[in-house]
Image 1: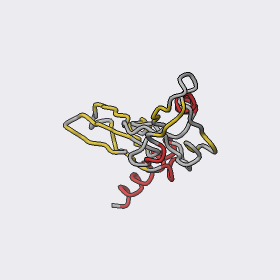
Image 2: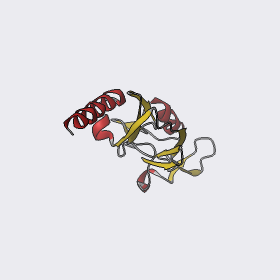
Image 3: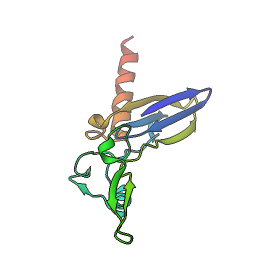
Length: 141
């Protein structure tokens, strides 16, 4: 996940299981989504002849979008209708991109973190915890 601020426009791009969350007046605003093997992407992968095992694409990769991970891309799969082999991409490399207008009077900070944090804490909990730490640090100055 990466965020780029250009003037008052925030561009967030995500490819994988990291996440970006904005604190706006103490409330969380998700700037990206995780690309884990969830129902929506499971249907796409299964529809192409792939499979998900223990939440992993082809039993290997926990994300459905990623750079690299070529063992889950360009895989030859037999088409049942034509008996021909076709190349399938079970893991995509196109990032999700969102653009948001930033309001400095309302927007406080952004947290960018991997699934290590977000498997343990929700976006709301993360923003609340970070905001609490920032406020405590400001009081100590």
